[in-house]
Length: 281
Image 1 (tube, rainbow, N blue to C red):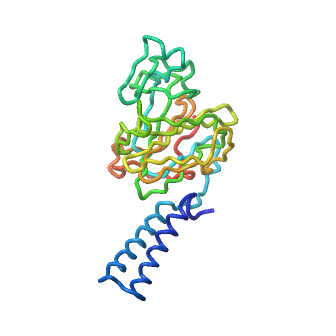
Image 2 (spheres, rainbow, N blue to C red):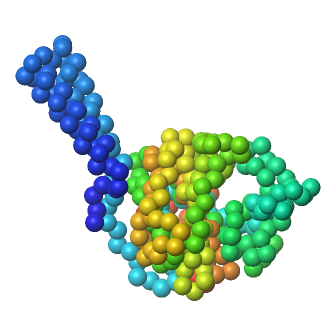
Image 3 (cartoon, one colour):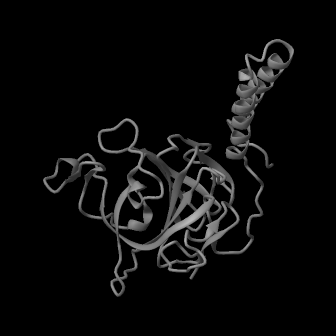
């Protein structure tokens, strides 16, 4: 059912009641030279902003077979074919002399997983140059969510949540919080979720906080079964969501801001749960 997302009713009602109370006091008792009326109007405006931010409209979910829908509302920043070049080390690998430590992102073991498309842990990726493609590559689509977009995130396919990890910058309890429209924001505070479909297909979705959005709220956990397009969490205020899929199985069908299309300078606008990002090959 459409309406307000979880957690949105209290901020909307509180600010609306504060504004209404201030207006009533200003009319019936003392306006304090109009300050009560001004405060009341500001509270109503804040309440209207919260209504817009926490809105959660119903969406028509595509019935097509072999498609993946967008996990987020917003403009497509880029579509990129990538190859894994490293991974988070396990306890034994962490003692190795091969470990590479990045000041911002922390330690990396300079070898990808045996099967990078299983997304068993967070991996380090680089763009694949034309002519150097391989069967273990992935496609990544990054969607930028402005403060005016719907911030509820949805499952890209019918699947079970296999993994869910919270990551921050190296040595930080929170953050970093770079502006979400920057490519470097992929290392902001984030929640990495791996969806496992019935045919053993794994999809990785990263909810990434932005300069304003600093709270990622999961509504589902490991082991939960989701329908395609089902709500599973949200990010508060402007932010970003990245999705990675096996490049040998899927082809992206959206245009990004890097495509050079003058009609889509910000990239194609997509909606969570209803816009198709990938089709099966």
